[in-house]
Length: 137
Image (cartoon, rainbow, N blue to C red; front, side):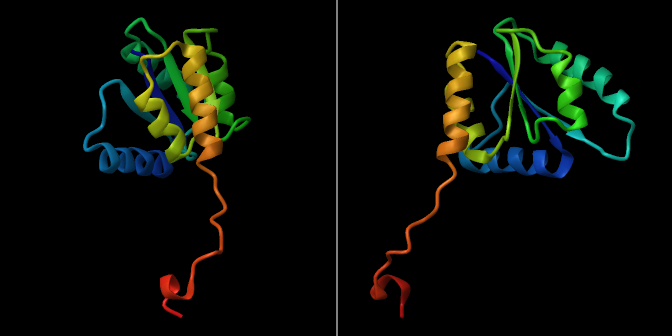
């Protein structure tokens, strides 16, 4: 099963994990957070990432779900990527994360596709078509 590493601003990442626990009832094994503390030098992050990736690596690969592509922390993570084994998808949101956690048995490429569709399909503009009875007006 592919492991998942969330790489995001610390409070945002903790919020995602807390939401996963609420939705799924518990945090699945093989899912961890590297919360970014912007008060620390970015160079410190490479060691934390290497350690966390080594701990998560069970042989099936690791998908890093990051908040913002091009930020210092994702640029650092990109140095550690290995095609098919350690990959990164940015723009993490809760629908993306839930979908990834439900399909970790797929191949890395298939899981990346699920992540991307989960993220984009989770963004919806709700129709403004409720009846007066539904709105109470």
